[in-house]
Image (cartoon, rainbow, N blue to C red; front, side, top):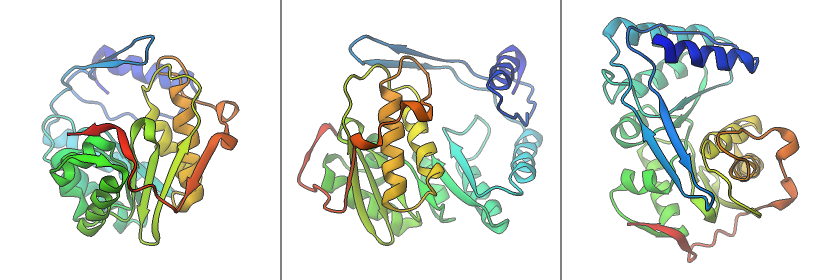
Length: 257
């Protein structure tokens, strides 16, 4: 957290009753703007964030270590701040595993590829990030399954892949499952991926039951306006279907080229 935007983030989290362990930095926390249109089209304007010094990078690692002493999971979400090497998440995964903590990694590009060598427990790419990781387009659900299997071969324990309107895919050492949900209206997909990952971890972070929870949370999030996050009252588990009979021939609604 840095500058006035960092202080605002801390205040907003505090107002939600969320404990904050701040890592102060000299630069200002970046501001992101999401424009959600009535038809569901989303435009994101992400400002460049501060560049972290070597001391700030180490303080961040130390703060994560201190705060996660009794944790079951650490969720690492988003791109890396400027100044951090692509291997930074890999270092965090290694340190977490040494402390007996599991890692859920939601990032992309070189940071994702670098981290795979340290075997993160779960990675959560969307369709575009999955295609980028394997350097080829995805046209069907089967293409996504093959790409997820390749990430597992590179080190991921499990792959929880968001396929947009088509649903979500979970591939781990025991097989593959496909989950989807009935969605009456899409208001905003801001934070839908984060909600899905939260739902997955809330349900234990393993197996089809956790996938069903991820789908329920993601479906609830897209039906809420703006950046509103779903509460338990917003969930509709009955609208969720999870199956081991993965529809590999299904053409993705939004193929990734």
